[in-house]
Length: 288
Length: 299
Image (cartoon, rainbow over all chains, first blue to last red; front, top):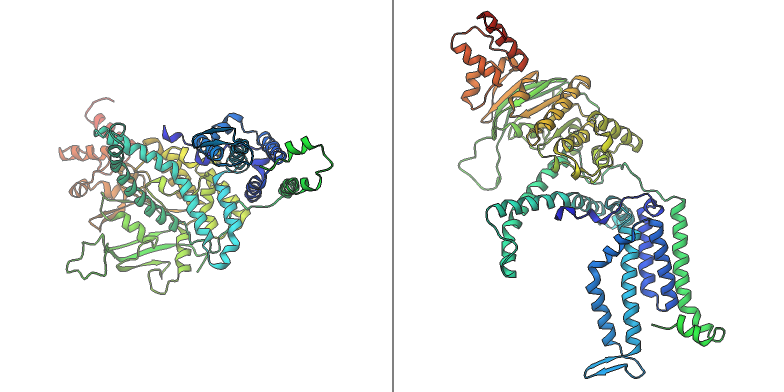
């Protein structure tokens, strides 16, 4: 049923990636995304592929879970690949030339690497961040990283609190939706047949009660929070404090080396053309 | 004004009118939700406030905690007027930290996605030091017997367990008065018993003033003192025995005494000599036993 949806896709565990400070993971994820977009040679891709594989192994998250995470984007993937395949114009003769369809060698290579790039991006960020960080520490991490913005009067704490409450109420609201759906079904509502418009209309008797009860909930929660002396982040302490430890600094080091390596792989090739055999050069440093 | 002990809480002529659009000039004001209630509550008392739905009992609770401001009347803590205009936000903050409140729906009171972080929410707001918060959270979870669930997600707990977590969240603030606003109404019998036991434990062992707002007679019968609110007015104030022996008064406002007491009242109307102040099941049992042995019957 819909209540099976896992909250924020978090898989509890105690691997070395789970234990990292959420801020470290957020920063590393940003570094990772930048690198994945920068990389443009097969050797660079190989580096990223290897590091993603080692991340998966380190996080001890089963490969099945990870493949499941890629499944929903399969259509996006195919679409991106096809666009690249048909829209890339190469210099050599097209391999296929059928009326308006022209496929070049460059197009094929580009399509493959583009798909690989998206897959690596999804797997890398989810292993590094969403699978291994609980939503609450993710929120704490974001709040802490954005806290300099408080100086220019951006209510960072309020946003973080909103996120926390939203996460807290997702399962509650799902439960409620199920209850309302069952109540409407028992009154003869039909959600699963008829045209698209008819089915969309059938959702109205679910959405309206859901909204009404959410507002009621919000009101009650606000009163309860006030009773517990909530007044924003004024003079507020925290049970769990985020602290960078040795392992966080070590991981920053690894992240920077990784970024440097990928950048180096982009720059170096033009200087070493003479040293390596032509074929090696063409395979590893082919500009995609 | 911090660190005072709430020795006495006194309400004088407390009235409240729900007035949603106060700006409109209205000829007829809605009837007051609370009407001229005067009552004193002392430290360590265990009080039940009874009334049917819409009687104003919840309004009464919200006024005590300054969630609502009284339309007329005053509330005093140790003789100090806490409803005066001079009260600053910090003063109100202090009062709320001393008068905790547990509500009806446990789902709508829990803020965090992990039990112990939710319990820590109150102390965090009070600006308490980290090690002290840790200590308080552990203690509070132990009081409500939820230590094993410290790292669980609230939405996976039962109603009674959630309500216990909500209570722990209040206990961790170290209040002196806890108001339970129909906190057992949404729970199953087992959950209700758990919550009620915690209430009584807090009252007996921690000397916390407990105000249980309820419409369950059996719960009210366990309190030391019972207040009955009907149509916003304080109708009766006395010990549980005094109140529940007035079966006719209760009937006139649509409430009932505990079943045993009702039975004894009927018997007494028929001319039997039975006590009218037996309110717990055991007392009623003894009364009936005495009556039967008197008549030569056996039990």
